[in-house]
Length: 98
Image (cartoon, rainbow, N blue to C red; front, side, top):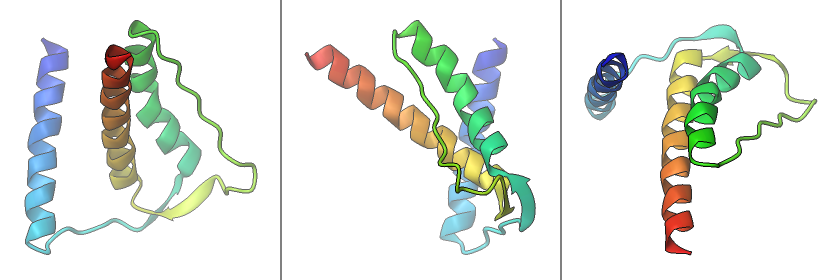
């Protein structure tokens, strides 16, 4: 049940964000954050779901990429999470079609 509530809350937040973007009212934070940490956290939940589907998840960040960057870490995390959902769904469709 907790997973359903979390998913539902994420959908509502995404809808609210889309509404803000369309209205030109999306405010981005500007703060220093760990790029590796944000991406790692966003992909961690993907790894559990992917393992259940016999998919592997790899993360490789080039050493030249700085750990600390300035921007909106929470929005970046949202983008990575949404991309991972698309990737997993696409991978599952490709696997089923072969």
